Image (cartoon, rainbow, N blue to C red):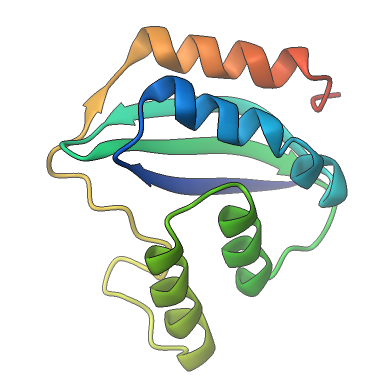
Length: 126
């Protein structure tokens, strides 16, 4: 059964080109966990970028798996530690365990299209 998954990645103190390189150099993670990206959404923050990857998978992925996958794709390691603790303790944040704070995000359409197209070109999507 096909399931929707949203991967949320936080990158601080990096250019978009560096963020893009990190994600594209870790394309193996998508193959390993049978995740097919449908769309990437790029948001500029005061310190870097938030990347949301909307995807499909036929695998059952637990919250622990999502924490690991996000970390393997380059998510901020401190955020991953907080997420891991929230998942392990069943003490989710009031907005859920997988939180990106959005008060100062700015949608970047051109970067969204660029990253989405790169993910599709890598052949991860069916």
